[in-house]
Image 1 (cartoon, rainbow, N blue to C red):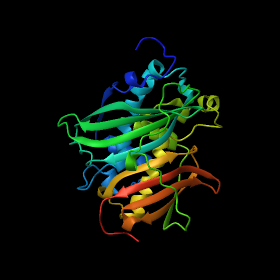
Image 2: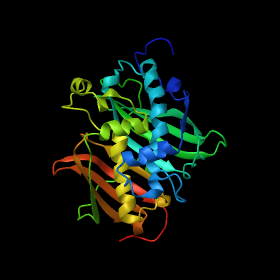
Image 3: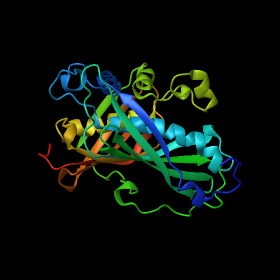
Length: 307
């Protein structure tokens, strides 16, 4: 598309695809795990020589960042009046098909990630854009994970967009917190260096997460933590509380990103066990007033319930 659009044309948007390749090695996995608060004494997360060395399952959000970079770069070609500073990560769904391959010493794993727009929905003050993203092992073609990234984009006129979201089951469902006492609560104090560490681990080099001046221009008092970092901490807390830390129990997750987290904040994850332990609803808060992640759930494979 070469001409700037004046309306949204779904017939032209939906056939579009974006494909990127990314690479990772053992150091990438270690850095990512540490960026989510993994203990340096947990050798399964921090030592590549450990027999159970693995990436935390939300490692599956990282190739999405590169793919969404390509999609966002193209948004001015299919969204009228698009401005990048009006683009907010609103919801996220992740389904892990199998564990990420562990690279041999000195080697890298190459991933191929393809994105396509599932829907564009008119929200009056802007539009939501839901992007489906599939990541595979480039060497074998085997699918590793599936993500859906939903962005809310302010001040984009909705003419031509859909009037409501599609029902995609667990992918589009919301999971409000139950009106009862949580079954488990965990806290994580983010460090002043958390934003810088996660930027290095994820490859998301948006200056909003490191530069105070850029953050102020975006309407924030200071740099904010990347949303995928906060949701990664939440999933780690769920696995610790209800799966004895067994990442192999992780099947998928869905979350709504609500408010920002600032480096130095204490993030509290409140969790509710449901459906015999197969579903854990959760929300993440800072203090008593700020809910930063809501309507969230982690889906677990069958296993011994941790009560």
